[in-house]
Amino acid sequence: MTVHQRTAAAPDPTAATAAPADPEAAAATTVVPEIRRARPEERDAISLLLGESFMEDPVSGWVFPDEAHRRAVHPAFFGVFLDAALRDGWVDVADDLSAAALWIPVRVDAGGGAGEGAGGDEDQGDEGQADEGQADDEISELLAMADPENDRARIVAELTEAAHPGDRAHYYLPTIVAAPGRRGEGRGRALLTAVLDRCDEEGMPAYLEASNARSRGLYERLGFVLTGTPIDLPDGGPRMWPMWREPRG
Image (cartoon, rainbow, N blue to C red; front, side, top):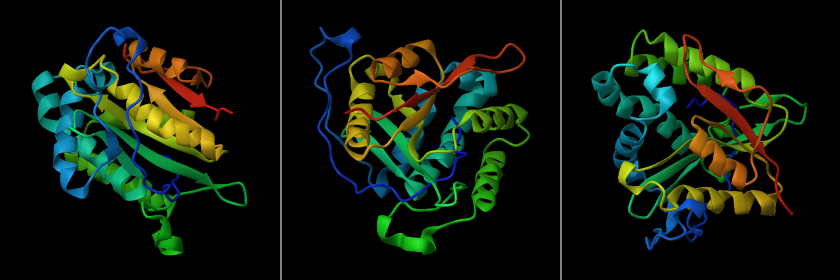
C-alpha cells in the first residue's frame, strides 16, 4: 500500500491491448477494455476508484477499522499514492476507468546505493531528481494530513519499507485495483501483462506486496515468488506477502 522506495525515470508511455481473462473467468464473455496510460484530467476519478476498491481489502480494513471513516478518508489517502505514481512513474487504466495500476520505477545508482527521483518524464534529466528523505517526508506529511494520528498507516509503511529490496533496479507496483463490480473479469491480469511483457523485453524485475490470498495466487501465476518472510501486521492484523518477479526470456 505504501510508496516508500527510490524511483527513476519511467519508460516511454506505450499503449497495450488487453490480455486474456483470468483462468477463473475463462467462461465469462466479458470483453476486457483496452489498457492505456491515464490522462491527467482523470486523476480525481482514479482516486475515487482506488478508495472504493480498497473498502474490503484486509490491510485497509486493519488500518481503518471503522467502515464509515474508511470510506471518508480513502480517496485522499490513496490519492497520495496516486500522485506519487503520476509524478515519479506512471498509471495504467482500463479504458472505461474500471481498473487501474500504479507503477514506480526503482533505480540503483552506480555506487550501489539507491536514489529517488521525480522522474515521470524521461527527458526531465537530473533536474527531476529529488532527495530521498525529502520525498519520503513529503509522502508522510500528506498521509498525516489525510488521516491525522493514524499510527497503523505508519506501521504498514515501516514494515513494507523494511521488506522492499533495494539492491536492484525494478518496477514497483504499490497498488492495483478493479472496481468491485468488475472483479474476476481479467482486468487485473490485463493491467499486469501490459507491464510485465515490457519487463521481459527490458530485462527488468518487478516487485509488489500482495495483501490477500486471491491476489497472491494471480501474481504467482504471472511469475512472482515470495521474497522471504511474510509481513504479519500486529494486533491480530492480516498478512502481506512481498513478491518479486524476475524477467522471463
